[in-house]
Image 1: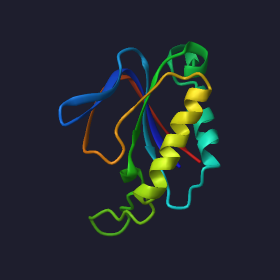
Image 2: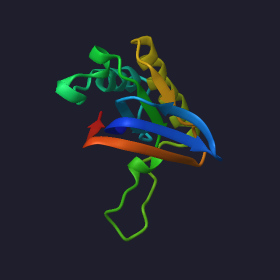
Image 3: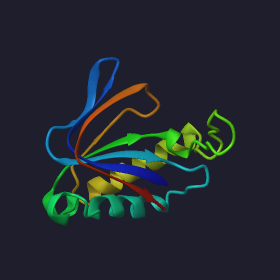
Length: 141
């Protein structure tokens, strides 16, 4: 499982012009990718890491501040670009495998008390964000 996590002052996801998820205050935008070999056992680990990641201002986390997270599924995080000019997606999990794992991470975050907004799995999404810093990290399990 891999996540690109950006500290933002606001972020939103729209599908066909409809706002499906948004945070209107400082928090984290999480682009979450699932590897073909990932299992549900990784969901609680990723949720804990995201919730407790100390990258908000003053080295705070969503766990300590109650800041929201916007989680957006992103299979392209597993695009392989070492050969040629066209990415290969063979490492990315198939949708029927990935969607339950993304849902499991979101469920685990919410069980921890996190405020979580999401995109819409499999949809053509537009993601808009205002980075704070900018401050972006890669989290990988």
